[in-house]
Image (cartoon, helix red, strand yellow):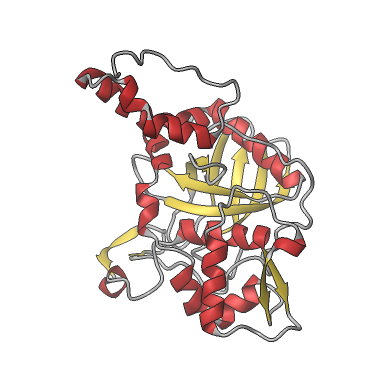
Length: 301
C-alpha cells in the first residue's frame, strides 16, 4: 500500500486546516518508510511556517472601533525574570524569587494575544451585576480558547463580562483570576512558528510587513508582533501594535502596547530608507534595530 502511494494532488487553495492534516498525518505515507525521505519530510514540516509566514489577508471590513490603550489592555504587567541596569542590559544578578515563578512572568505572548482576543470576542456590560470569580475564570478560559486570528464576533455573539466597562477595569479588579486563566507561558517556546526565527527577514520582507501593518491599522485592526534580534537575543518579546502616531518621509512611528509596562504606551519606529524596524529604549532593552515578525495571523504564526 505504501509503495502504491507515489503522489498526492494539492488543491489550488491550500487552507491551513488542510495543510495541517496533509503534512502531519500523511507525510510519512509519502515517505515510503525511507530514512532519507523521512528526514526530508521532517525538514519539510519544520519549514512549513515559512510558506505561510508572508501570507497576509487584509481585513474585509472596518473594525467596529479602534483598539484603545486605556480600555483594551490589562491592568497588570508581565514581569521580567532578569533585573536590568540603567542602560537596559541584564545584570549578572538574577531575581531568584521571579525565577521560581512567584510572580507573573514569561507571558508577553499570552498578554499580547489576550488583549486582542478581548478586543475581538468580549463584550462588557458595566450596569449588570459582576460575576463570581469562579464564573469569571470560566469565561476567561472560554475566550482564551478562541483562535485570535479569527474575525471579530458580532456584539450579540460575544462573551459577556458584566459589572465592568472594559478589560483594563475588570483585570485591575481581578488580576489573579486573569493571570491564572489566560494561558501558560511555556507553550510559546514550543510553537512551530518559532522555527523561522533562525532565518533573518530580508529588508524587502520588512518593507512588506510595514505596509501590511499600515493597511490593518487603516481598517482599525492591531497587529501582534514579535520583536527579536536573533542570534543576540537582547530582546525576544511580543507586543501589540495598535496605532499610527506619526509618519514623515524618513520614518513612521507606531504606538505599541507592551505587556511589560501596562501604564505607558511604547514606540516602534520604521526607517523608510533602510527598511528596518527599531524599538525605543525601555527598562529591559537598550533600544535599537531589531527584526519584526507578525504573530497569530494563522496557526503557523
